[in-house]
Length: 465
Image (cartoon, rainbow, N blue to C red; front, top):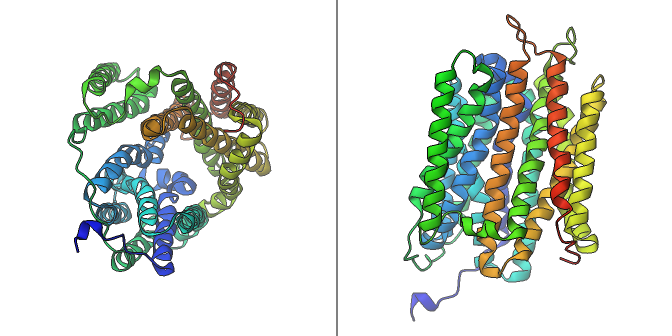
């Protein structure tokens, strides 16, 4: 008997629940920064632009790690890659927990970004070791537990940071990640490596895309201080252009590109990318601005909310985001993706403009953030579904990876622009932005979102996708 003919070892419920526990732990670790961002800014002496950078660096590194993890999982086996990724995540969580300053905390978040590639690897392992019907159920369980972990992190980060310290809000979920990883390593059987890709991995593309995203974030962070550092900002723009040009050239020539830019020539793909970018820019405005407004002192125009209270205020938005995916799928099948995306854009633009006009009560912000989260989930899910069904089966991964990268870039740009607006709107000698800065931020986000309706008009209806 040869090992190559042996079927994969069937896994039991205990192994699936071990993956679920890992999903809970990673979801919690991923979500602790958002509700405590004002607290971190205050304790580490960060500017609002630096806080914006901290809130997106994990997503950026995650978008870069995901295609690497999938490629290596196919080549070396999903379990091997998953365990090694979680070792990196655990190291990142410990670095974040021990971080004495912003640079070290940023390093920890960069390492934690490896967790974004862990969830798809979990799905791959489940599909390898379970029949199709049971695999769908297991994937649903793991996905739901990841969302539940994110909600738990949102709620618990504030009380832990205030009752113990900011160090423990990273340390506790990291310890849970370590425990769950050891359990998965014990229970999950090894899966055989796949056939090696003769074309190899696009390392130059990964390096150049990393440089492009990092330089873009630094340029946006320095934009409010252009008057005092024009040469530095100018140099960053030149470096950004060089990275972007080099990355484009490499992706067009390499045999197996990290991101196949030729796919952008297809209308269904480039329209999805443009819409995803604009929608995520709008979403990120609310994601960043609302917690900042909650935290501002009542003596100004804010609410003086603690990190614990901010977590509770953000919970309805997290619930709405978790419900948006299934709702979007049902509506897309019945009405078509264009109708779903159009409805989502209208809801989001209306909510953002309403937040600009009315934000004097806590419930204004809670409801506004919840509607933005719901609309974003509707739009992005419909975009991914539409993209996946508009290309050939062999191109699904390439097309959806373009949407993923665009989503991260849109979110990162939106957060950095919002942070720059608040920084620019802060009077000299004060650490409190003018209220007009928040109004400007919401209006800019709403206007960009509303402009995306021009793109939806050119989309096919996509009924019964």
